[in-house]
Image (cartoon, rainbow, N blue to C red):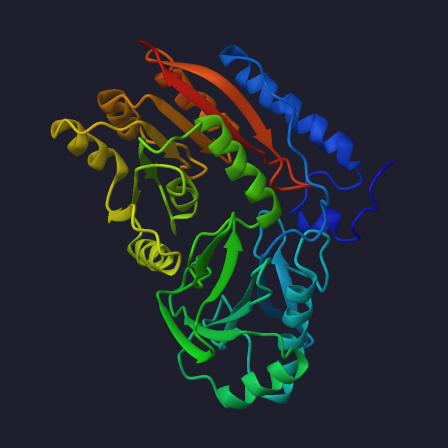
Length: 381
């Protein structure tokens, strides 16, 4: 049975599998991973979602104005900077969509102009809404071209009158002519300036710019799969490379001797350290820096590592990092990837010293072509 097709499917371009049953989507993804990875070993059956709808806990809307003056909010049409108006989306959190519509309706009464990319005039550029799946907390980020937001307190009050469940409102200042959504400066207008969410029994602080997986239900399945494949014990020393705000490392810390998280982004490291304190974890520490350089330093000091978890960006790992892995030679590598193509490329580099033991696809992004894969590698003796 085909799924109901979104009326914006052809204009939006955000979903690749509109009108295709979820069972068929899973088959397509599993076959795609099999095609890329079959040379490395058997592909396990894909882990699908119980509910493939409204999973995105992070919803971003760009604001623009039609020629007749009407304000619209939505997403850029694929490959363009033309805004496709979106009030509701099959894969976005429904409450987040409602809040964005409310913000748009309030702009006129508060005489707030939306930003014009061509002229550089106007104030409101984007709205970002982040939700805590387990906690129910909601953060609204108003991305503006200037820190001067007229009647900001009254605006927040009016927005919260419509949506009292909002936990915090943040003004993010992006005054650069750039395609980047968020700027470097955050001003808290209401609440703490961050939200918290519980994942795999740990509480995590999520600030406007924090990386946090967008599908929390499937993330639990992903991380539990990674831990099961790693078969950790109390004697293990673990490195969590590309650790972000510390999610994977903190889940691993419950069952090992020591975890060292390494992350280039300074703000993410601060969040990770705060998360470790919040969860009273004494056996995990975080280092800001390049993970490859850090591993090579450990090798120089003849420090042993039992397991390395790596979850690099979509572009995959760097040759330098892979080289450092082959220098320090951990017993196991658990490679999590949101881009199986670059993961397959990296596995070719590692396979001379490591054996691929398991390949597990996980569907983190229903209705899209994207698929996450967890690969376990063990050192050849």
